[in-house]
Length: 480
Image 1 (cartoon, rainbow, N blue to C red):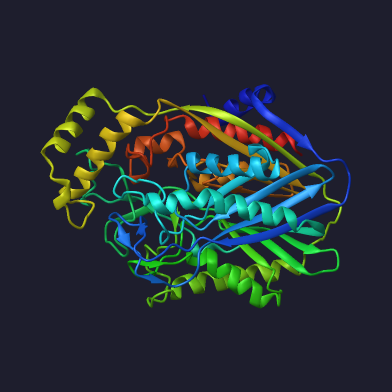
Image 2 (tube, helix red, strand yellow):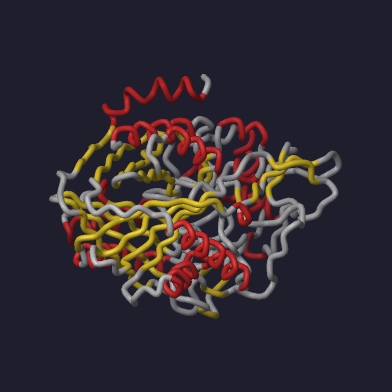
């Protein structure tokens, strides 16, 4: 079924599955922001690479940041955690505490992660274990951040804006010329490759478009004092951070730079969310850009460019103190991809013969990589449910709308949602309320590549992207 036909078919049925559509009565819009420190202690596992690292240095603090809105009796809170991946079980634990402490229902709260790769490990990945002690500490701190933000609600005015910053988005999936080795961990030959060597003579062309737009929701008191900016950009992360070092990456640097450039007070909180960046990063594969190579320099440069662009856009911003708050949520049932009997038998045999305590560093073409994926496939088959219930949300405030996506979605999905949404301003927050891994559009599975390899980080059915984005566009329409 073609994509447009699918969307026309599914949208009328959405209102039967939506958990609720809530609209505030016309009244004064209020907001409040908070951040709670979640910097882990030395020794905490970091899972942003293909092997675990252990915290030895802390470059900058990590936070849970919350931005709460209230209008009449209605409330909604955006929560963003400095972490690579916060899964649905942890988020549900946090939302249960939020319900107990504040009365907010799960649908009134969005919890997402930034996807910085230099934070404490709270989930098990295909190649790295979770740090259970750190994981257990987070739900209470997430709930505390929400409580504080709600306690600070005061009359505000808001402004939406967007501006293109194309320099720091690059499709990382490439068609390669004949002769480039493209064998996945399961011994199969791929049609595309993720993150090929920059400057390679085998580079042909990138697979998909990128979304260059920086979007934001700005919040001030009625008197004009800055409260927060909730921003969004569709690049994976910046990097340039040493091993064994904790950092919020450019997401944290944005808070620092926006506060300074806006001359905002200490109460200002800059919050950067991850857009649809599953197939996007900052790498310069053609070697036409020149990023600094020193530690932390790249993330500071990217934050500088994005914050400067937001300041330019703010000059044309229109402020609204009477924006209506509307939100809707639904759950989408998505099946898990199953390994074939042959693949599962192959992976079990690899696991049976591997001494995992002796594995060293990993290269995509190395045998360790295949062995780690074999272990993940076996555990995926044994422990994960066959069907996932995934939450999606749409939130509108005046001229703008935000949609949430429960995983790492490709730029194509975000661009389609922006085109289909009728709001003057729209952006998607990925890694929100659940984390089901990569959710590529269906045609991408025919090409293969890292984001499609069956594992705990990419395990949804081939049609999951269409199901989820189709449901979300229906919710977006319902709150406009």
